[in-house]
Image (cartoon, rainbow, N blue to C red; front, side, top):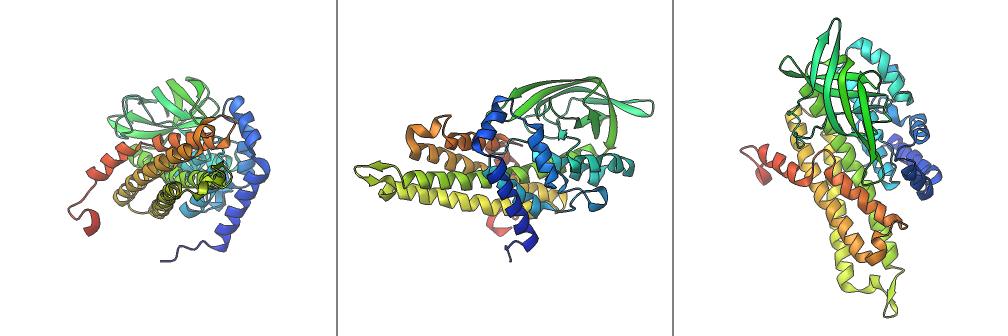
Length: 370
């Protein structure tokens, strides 16, 4: 099997990496964190690179690319610890294009691709515990339209978003609706562990547009895209964490020699390297399975997110231990990579949740016999 990237994919990676190196330094990121964890100018720059329109077809002013290109982009944004939720643009583009009616596609996809509209998925509820089929938010018909009432938690940049994709129960079945952040919407924002921004969002008879009445299928697909993005972003963060740790070990001296010469520490770096490569291979697996049939795709995402969770925790914790005290100081960028890994491990379901999903989705020919 050929795992080489195409010339276009390598050029895309190079363009994003150059933007991160040139335009998104540590001080700019610290400024964004102090300002609340979201910078609209940065999001606009990402959109101007075409990244918000990766999953938007070309006839709607997008780039018409696929999961591998999304993976390439998210890896580079992970290396740069970019705060802005580009994964939400990929989710929005895919859901609207894949499930929405033609008038909605025409009205929305171009604005998503250009960055004019930040459309985010608002699906988590306090009682759901990452189970996607548990939903208390309600949708009701109002004349020719709909209204939505309910609460959603941990909505990425929820108090900065222009609109929301909201799963809600309608006539006993989950539907997916689009809600503008205008009448009937209250968003309370707060910083998250990694310095980005989220919000608690309350919908009170908020006017809505129906995306699809097959809301659970759309939600599962949306979350699976989010998982693949989180896996790719995690690989980028792990890569940079490994590089920082190796550099520190080749600089820090004890007993007159660099600590990189200590055999026990070299063994720990070797173990971290194994987790790094396991994470990378499972991220590839997740991205390549995004267009598979739903049942196969869901199994693949659970497997990938479980392995990435193990790898992120192992690499992050060992990096801090190998650094010593400096590894947890706010002034050192390594601590911010650790916090990002910690948050990614919890995003779209933590490691134990996905271990349960893997177990529940096992078939008769499970494991090595599959």
